[in-house]
Length: 396
Image 1 (cartoon, rainbow, N blue to C red):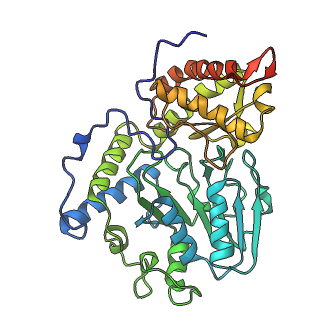
Image 2 (cartoon, one colour):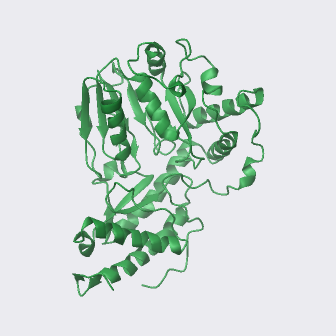
Image 3 (cartoon, helix red, strand yellow):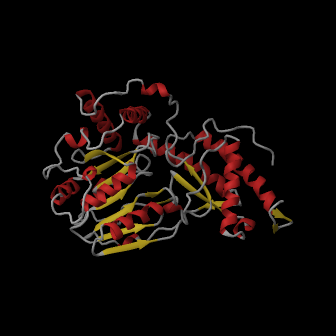
């Protein structure tokens, strides 16, 4: 196969940090409030605009609270687990690496009594119908390391007694969410809107805010200061949104303001979702006619539209041992990187060897279309080294 002539204009297909919005330039940061306190009048105004835009674009209920925290989505999710859990048993669902980390937090670190663990391998999802909504429920909306999403939230009882804690980082801003089913939602700026890393966001329903306030003095484990959002048993109005415990980077705040303003300018959440789904559709059409690759997700219903994970199903590849499969997949990735066609599309280190292509809203559909011929080209270059007369044989 000849090398394709057309390359993507932007080769950034990383699943986090993700590519910047189209047209982004460093000049968008010129109004950043650098050298100033985030607790100044001007600093609070920036943070207030930031939370206002997130609320507007996500169509959040007015009584949901939005907090900016440290440590990206990991920090936000661990904060949620460490400050909200305890009063009830927990049902926890895990089917990829980060979900497994939340299991470690709940079972080994917090040592919650009455934990029900529901697990599945990469590409699959646990039986969500087994949930007991009298318990607190912990789950990932979209598994960025497995390409598997929750198909819907119909399995959550809107009249539940427990809280639902949702790691939404690679799905929010790309998928519709029924907020009547969710109590604590966490994410980072570095995913669907391509913001800078290190900052996390936690969104709390009134029920979750009440639990956090009530839990302040009854938590059975040591709680780091950076997790103590409730002050004197209260999430103070305004302070929670505009005066976080940690010091946020006002450069990063300016960058996220730019991303949110862009999102609003193109039509908000509806357009963000449409752009993401259009990107996925290009890969779906390509996979349908390509015999060497398939989606890692075992069914279309649970297939992620953002972190699209692909597995190589060619006979010669499947016959290799795991180490050889990893090397072969890495060779494909390296070829595309060297050609400046696709950066950082290797599968997650703990996931099965393959490819992972970010298709969130900041990716242009035309770039995904330009990418697919290059995927075929890189595959054929590597396959030729491994196959001779139908037999596995690495070229010397």
